[in-house]
Amino acid sequence: MGPHMTYHLAGGEGGYAAYLEHLGPAQERRWASLRTPQLTPEVKLALVEGVAAEAESLGIGELEARRDAALIAILQTLRTMEPLGADPRES
Image 1: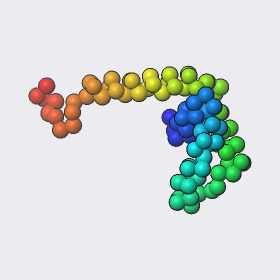
Image 2: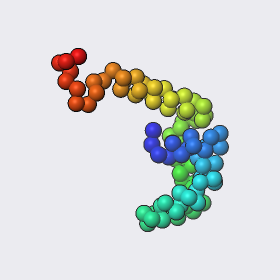
Image 3: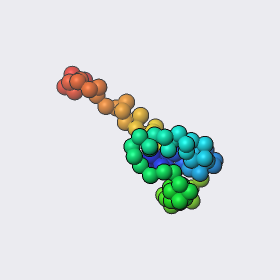
Image 4: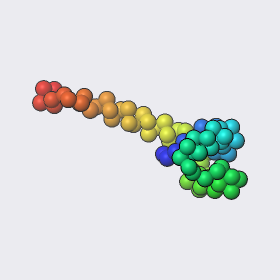
C-alpha cells in the first residue's frame, strides 16, 4: 500500500478528498521544502482520481480490512522468525 492509498484511508469515509481538504495545507508546507508542485485543484483532482482507480471501487472499510489483514500476516510471520543475531542451530 503506497502513500497515496494511506492518505486515502487517513481521510476516513471522505477518502483522499477529505484528507487533502483537512491536511492539504500541512502537506503543501512539507512539499515546499522539497521544491515540489503546489497543491492546485488540478493536482488534487489527479491525486484523487489516481487513488480511486487504484482502489477499484472498494470502500474505506474493505481497504482497511485488506490493510489490517496484511499487517496481521506480517506480525504473524515476524513471530515465527529467529531474532536477529540468534544462532538457529541453538533452537
